[in-house]
Structures are given as structure tokens and as C-alpha cells.
Image (tube, rainbow, N blue to C red):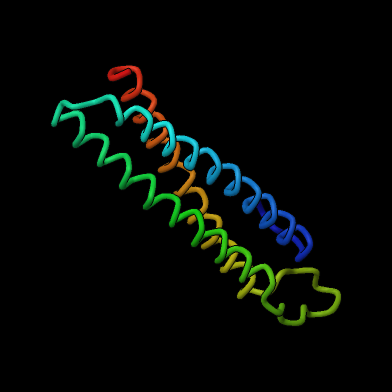
Length: 126
């Protein structure tokens, strides 16, 4: 998405933060589900997998929190004056948006991979 004004940038940031809130809720739910499954498993190899997912959920919940905070901070940062009648977003805003967008997309992909792997784990061990 090409951002053409600050309001559009701000709206996109708010959308990302809302999506990350949703992801946080889902990962918290999956962590709880993992704990319920773990209570019934004694196989050492499966317990290693459980520990792996528990660690991944903790790491990704931290990543979600950190990215949400970065987006919030960047969205609230003062915006340099735009050049009158040029209608473009200052480079500092544009480059910040590009970095946040890349970070958000990368995290979304990683979260999707972990969710898919975890669902397969549940199919195999529950």
C-alpha cells in the first residue's frame, strides 16, 4: 500500500495494532490449550515439542507486544512539516512506514507458520 497522507498512515498503523491484538489473544489461547494438552502427555519426545511451542508462544507474544509498541510510538511521534502544495509524505515518515510494514508482514508470516505447525501438532498428539 502506498501511503499518500499522514491520516492514511495513522489509520494503517491502527489497523496493524488491532490485528496484533487479535493475534495476541489467539496466541494466548493456544498457549492455554498447550498447557491443557501437556497435562496428559508423558512421552519425553512429545514433551520436548511442548516445550518448543511454549517457548515459541512466549517469544511471539513478546514480538507482538514489541511491534505494537513500536507502531504506537511511531504513530504518535511528531510529524515534520510537509512542503506546502506538494502533497507528499516526508521521507522520515515514509521510511518509518516501510520498516514497520516490513516488520509487520514478517511477523504475520511467522505467526501463521507457528499456528499451522501447532495445529498439526495437536492433530498428531490429541
